[in-house]
Length: 93
Image (tube, rainbow, N blue to C red; front, side, top):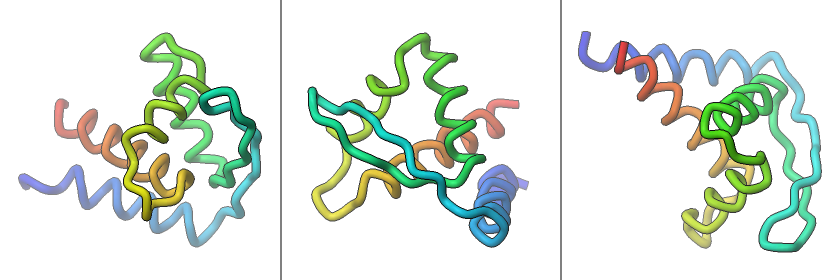
């Protein structure tokens, strides 16, 4: 199916949200400290993406922060980024 990768990723996110509590970590974005709460699975995936790109986690977070809309919270922007990355990787298989 054309959209099966997307549906699988969405189902994973729903399961994570139902079974995991967010964990707060501090990040430095553009020279300022901020804290972000994400579920452990999102932190793990976020770190893996930064490692794949060979950039520090703070740098990847700053890129996402710069690209997000004013209405979107940073944690939400990171979750969407991870979900899109996971979908693209699944679709590429």
